[in-house]
Length: 244
Length: 252
Image (tube, rainbow over all chains, first blue to last red; front, side, top):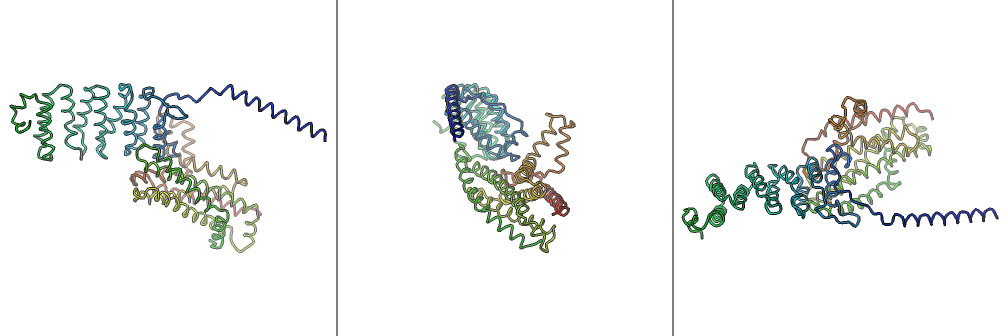
């Protein structure tokens, strides 16, 4: 009986000591929190498929959610300018290999990561948008349009915007509207290359005018006469008759 | 084939609450998939369908493996097998009746998973859904046969489950592992790559079955589903024959 009491006392003392050690340990680690080590390097396509146990679309969706929430977990929020956009773009290209049809990653790249406070950081991602935007299906051309907007407005790089606009104009998207083909002219106008913009618009009117809706032709004429041409030039141009 | 024995196994599945617990898991899994899918900024339905399809498929395979292994081991331990052998039923009949009953369970569970996935996004339903459901049923049938084989050979239920799950994971990853072996990342004629090739001879290519991309974009024909089904059938025959060999030689 006395032995049993003794054993019980020892156990209680042991519990008290271990509990105290636990609390002491808690004080030593309390201020250590999970840190975000920025965007990890993207794995290879074969390795990434393993995440979904051989189901590539499951890997794509799991990675997608991970990319969407990356840097903003565990009560932390990370400014976009702190992201490593080179690595991020590697992830975008990897995701592109896992699912070429989805618009989720191009959307995330454009509308979320495109809002970075230091727009120059976005430059590697433009290459990704160029590749996705050249696909001739699923209205993918619009990613080129957004890439032009980001290059022109956010990055203030009109030369790059013109390069992408030319890619867009020369792409083979079957259902792309005519205004997308006119994108180089819009960029040239903003760049100040008004003669080139005028020549391009005129060329589109000559070669595709019969396929365009009359409203679209009128809009093009208005753009030429009010945005590209100076007032005097517009007044003497027969194309601008009736347009003020 | 002994139909009373098939019925006995199916009743055991009901008695073990396999169907009831799976129904609950399907409900919880579907809710979780909807919750996760809704956190995506666009393509919420596609995310939900992929998470539900993949998650519920894995859970149902896991449940089937657990049921088959524990049921067979319990049959041995409770002397059910010895009782059956005392009846005018051949040993092979027992094996094939078990395999048939487990395949019926796989069929029902596969259809249940398919129904849940359809319910989550009926507007995405198409030919791809049907092929996906058929392929996950085939996958489940292959896996219950593998589970039956290991349950016959290995006397520990836990080890049997782990062995079956290892085959499942290996089968699902084999396409990627062979891709890595063939890539420039490793020496394709090195010992590890050769060992992998050797293992792949007798591993079903489960990665060719049940791709969730079919639920969204439809079946694109790029996967060798017919080859995977034929290989799965041959593999099932192999493990069933191996299980039969062990069972017919066993002394009770």
